Amino acid sequence: MNTANEPQPRGRHGMKIITWLILIALVVGGLAGEVLHANKDWKHFEAVRDGLWFVGNDIFISLLKMLIMPLIISSVLVGVASVGDVRKLGWIGLKTIAYYFATMLIAVTVGLTLVQVIQPGQYMQDPDTLRQAEQDYKQDSSVQTKMEKAPTGFGNAMLTIVKSLIPRNPLGAMAEGKVLPVIVFTIFFGILLTTMGARSKIVVDFFDVVFQVMMKMVLVVIWLAPVGVLCLLAWTIAAKGLGVFVTAIAIYMGTVLGGLAIHALIVLPLILWLFARTNPFQFMYRMKSALLTAFGTDSSSATLPVTFDAATTEGGCSKKAAGFVLPLGATINMDGTALFESVAVVFIAQAYGFDLGLAECVIVALTATLTAVGAAGIPSASLVLMPTVIIAVNQTLGAGDGQTSGILIAGIGLILGVDRLLDMSRTTVNVWGDAVGAKIISQTEPDDAVAG
Image (cartoon, rainbow, N blue to C red; front, side, top):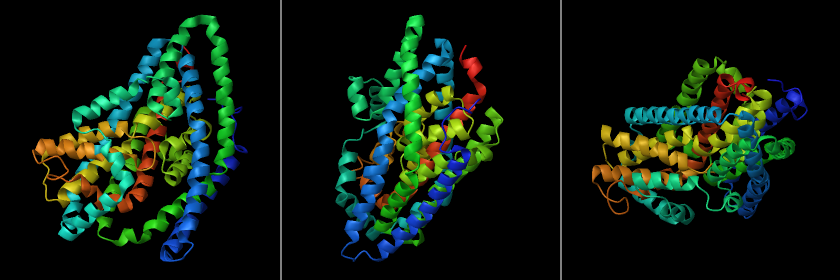
């Protein structure tokens, strides 16, 4: 693919500079956060932490989110229109969806295997610890309120996903930042646009120009990434400190991180090599700016503009394939989230003394995959949907509703304190999975074939 005319922040040299700046920001942000945590009694502590959140979230993340909808609409529409033959689009879509669900199920299997072998929950079977977890859950009113709105049961989880596909008001869905229904509407619009013949050219050309402008805006915002990443990481560490790594919860964290590492460094590279005959670690290196941004921002949706830029300029992905695969992946492809949910639910079950058998593990695998699809690409979104998995397992066990008996939903309090740090890692795996999918589709459905 010819990328000579594609915009880059001062070329590849500029991308290397940004990457190094983000790496430095991660180190400085971690150290600054730990210093703040050690001085939590300082009278200006809350003011400084609020300032970090303002710069990192209210400015940097908001700038990235500002670009998401116009970038998704323009890239998906141009990508669909460029396919030409609707049957070709259906084939590409089928391959993409098959890849997403296959990798999520593999990720869940990896997570379930590790958590059953390591048994981290057995180290948490302490009444005082469990009571404290339930208190932490009740005190975290924001998380609790969101969880109360989550679908309950396997069937409701499926219905929620199906209903989320169709926007009653496309403009309202755009305004509310609901990516999945916007993608569905745009694909539908793009498919019918291809049937309009020469009259469609003016519309396609318009959105192609919009896409080019959006990419230029992305490149400007990318230069702010180091500052945003530094502030967000410092804000995160300041709350709990790095000491969480040396407590008993470290065994649970090690299980999650171990599963994510196996999936990211073994499973996905193997899939990429088998289906695209691409050096996976060379491609990972080329995607470094997106992966580092995903880790720092903790949001696959906010990282989407950077992912698209890295994939098409550094990673050699087709703009047509990336324009279709990446926006869809940022919404439904959640390998890291699915793995995390499976480990977390089994961990909580172990902590409450429940030994899950094969049937319960199958329920966890299926429900975790479905809820991962429904998880928004925002920080800690998987926590909101975790009660769905817990209730589905309780129904299989005949153990209760998760409120007063069975595996208690309040057990989520065990992991609230360290979730942000784990979420940064699973978000990175989510974005890496999206990039691998875009590369596979680019190699198996090249532009000359797609243009049909």
